[in-house]
Image 1: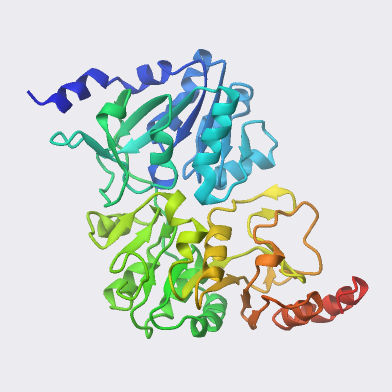
Image 2 (image 1 turned 90 degrees about the horizontal axis):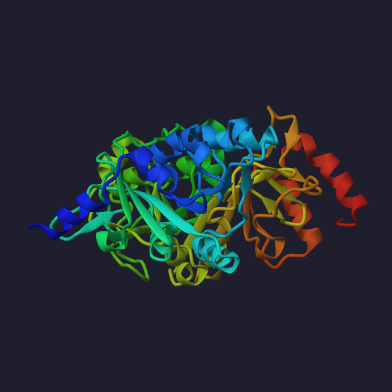
Length: 439
């Protein structure tokens, strides 16, 4: 008799029955991004009559879900989110009391939330998407995300596995044994994807100022979007780069296949790409599946600035919405309106700056809204979230150049930032800087 197979049968329930087996009041923490529990998130609203109040904690919702978008569910469900996706932005903009932002640094997100819930006595449920059970060993693999999932699963009061046979297996420390599971449901669905977009000419110009800042044998953290994609395209002449990043992105694959990324000169995890989640296309999911060169480790480790700083020549490349003339960076809100999240930007930036030979690079277009707004501003708009404080700032790059701000005075920073701002706004920025006493 296969003990684990029999245990699986005992714990298995139809999806709707499992949802109604949850406590009437609880906090349910979901797997994130491509690993979001599509079965649960797509069906829980149909059982609103069962719940008194359910807080559902998620991160980067990829699809549209009624429980956090339809105003009729206000008061029954609340989606607390570490990083807004498009549907969350719409619900927040409409002021529905269905979604609220959870400020965090990625490496602390899971631990801080668990600690807070323990203090208030909430029942904690972890609902995670997994591969089918390995019947020989009794382990579930949590697939493409290990940001906070294992940390939460091992401390939750109840653990539910949503088994999806379309999830790729990744190597890492995110194997959850069936003895730690309370319920199992099955829900087969294609994973959410994001396309790899070709960078624009302007994004390539920005990347052209970043590439010279990256030495051979550096270890990279690259974010997502047109600018990071453009940076990856300009790395083809570099030698023996390494990867230590929160998010594995599709733009990294070419660097592996061109022999640019070898990971052989990393200070830690030599020979391995280290990440904490993967998000991209179906082709990328196939590429990372059972790839022994990639390890998916817990976000509390991967994004710990002290761990990141152990890599010599660690280069962190992230994007921003706005930078003010003193060096404050806003990457996550438009004024007081939450747009995305801090994610791991401050984690990786601080770790890179502390690395021997490292650099923390913030990149942005010099203007927005078809050239009508400067992204370099005298003061951040009222209510803007400060993602990277000015005391942490290092390099800032636009299509007009790269400037090193670390250790410089406010007046020096203002002059340098005006120098890489869009020419249409430089006179206005100088005038405002004088009014503020910066110049």
